[in-house]
Length: 246
Image (cartoon, rainbow, N blue to C red; front, top):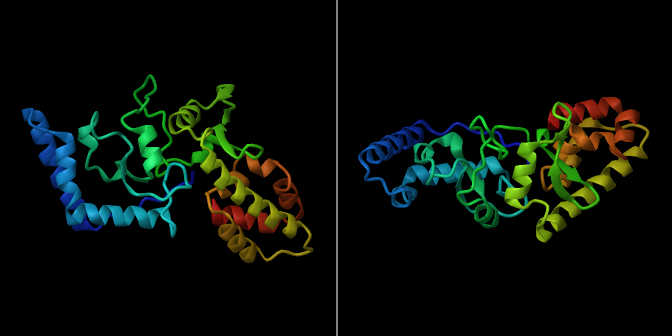
C-alpha cells in the first residue's frame, strides 16, 4: 500500500457529482432512494468515467489497487461504503481505485472506533506506514507497533484483517519480488564509494513495484540492514531520497 495524492477533478465533473449527491439526498429524505440503482445509473455518465480515469492516473502507470498495491485496479471503490453511507456516495474524497479481490473482502464492512472514526487506512488521506508495517521475512503486512499506546496500531490491525493482507499468497509473491529487487539495489549501492543521489532515487523508483519505499525510507525498514548501512555510509544521498520519495 502506498500513499496516494488526490487530484482535483475538472470543475464540470465536480459539479456533476455535487448534483448527483443532492439528488440522492433528496430521494433518501423522501424514502425513494435505491442506492445501487442510483449508482448504476450514474456510473454510465461522462462524469463518473472522468472520475475513474482520474483515479487510474492517481494510481500510477500500472493502475494498481489503492489497497493492496498489487492487483490491477478495476473500478471505483467507496471508502465509506455507499449502501450504509449513501450521503457519501458521490463524494470525491470518498472514492478510490480498487481491485476485485480487495473489493470482495471489504464489501460493506467498515469498522469504526468508539468516536465514529474509520479503522481502515485511507491511502489518499494517510501515510499507510503510520499504521502498517512490512514483515521482510514473510513479505506480508502487520500492524505497526504504536509507542503511544504500547500496542499494535488498531487501524493497522483492522486494515490487515479486513483486506487479508497477511493471508494472500499472490500478494506475498509480488511483494517478495519487489523486496528482493530493492535489497539487491541497495547492496550494490553500498559497494560504491560515491553515490549519485538523483540516480539512486530513479533506480529505487524503478525497483519499487509495490509502494514499499515509504517503509524503507521512513518506516521501520530504515532501521534494518542494509538500509541502516546505506543511511550511515551515504547520508546525503539518503537524505535526498527521503526528501524526494516520501
